[in-house]
Image (tube, rainbow, N blue to C red; front, side, top):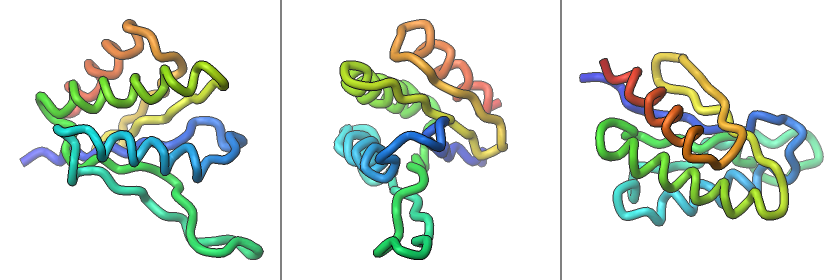
Length: 122
């Protein structure tokens, strides 16, 4: 069976507050009917001066077939909302290590991401 996990991170390390953005993305994805139960925040241990771990990435456990469409739709809905006030770039990595960046919430980018997710299923 093919591993269809996908990890989503902020592409720009300087994005602040990264933890808040990624927690929001995880919550939005988890609220989606087709993704519920398949989304988790990936913590990073705290650095000196921080209290508690922070969210470093969002992992989606099943991004194959119809779930890929649900994931792309939910990610682009989230990106569209963020684009009203700031630019957010995402790095999306498949379980096979291949990765791509998503820079804008456009139909062309959504199609490209959907093709990228499908390529990992063959």
